[in-house]
Structure formats: C-alpha cells, structure tokens
Image 1: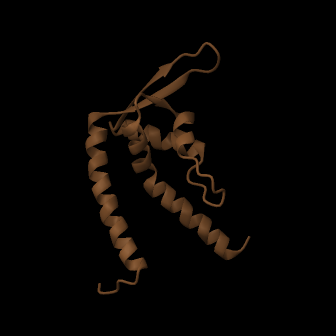
Image 2 (image 1 turned 90 degrees about the horizontal axis):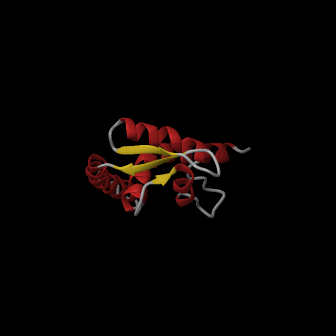
Image 3 (image 1 turned 30 degrees about the vertical axis):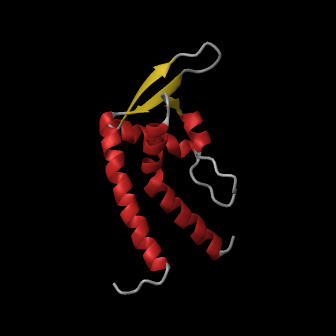
Length: 122
C-alpha cells in the first residue's frame, strides 16, 4: 500500500469519526419510525467502494454514546424469526442538538471550502 493510500484511509477514518454522530442524528430525525442498526447502516452505504463511510460495527458505539447523552432512546424488540433487535429513535434533546450541529457543520464546511478554494485572507 502506498503512503498516499494510507494517508487517504487515515483521513477518511478521521472524517467519519468526526461526522458519524451528526449523520446518525440526521438519519433518525428524518425517519418515520424507530430504526435498528442494520437498517441505519443501509442508509449510510455508498456505491463507491473507495470511500468507505462507516463500517456497521463502528455504528453501535456511536449509537450507544448518543443514547448515553440523552440524544437517542432505544428499546429491544424480541423477534420470532431471529435475534432481538434494538430500535433507536431521536429524542427532543437530540433534535435540538441536531439543529445546533447543523449550524456548526455549515460554518465548518464554509470555512474549509473557502480554504480549499484558495481564500487566504486569514
């Protein structure tokens, strides 16, 4: 593997970890009903294999962290045809936090885009 490829993978991993909570809150905010982890992971799939957004296993620690912060709630639903599933839904506090995070994301994106476009009057 080339140093560039290693650097790209590291950069993508850092971006993913920094945006995972925002993305998860957003998915659950727009969901019509509570969702379980695998279904959430399907929403996060990207057709480009060169850009692995988030592995399904990395999703669960973020979901638990968001729940621990009171931004999500969950419940377990037993299944007759398979293992029980944990369903997640966003809380009122999660919706309020999402609004703040969307503003922060917009500011961050505008700043980075400006730098990438050569804005150097910093």
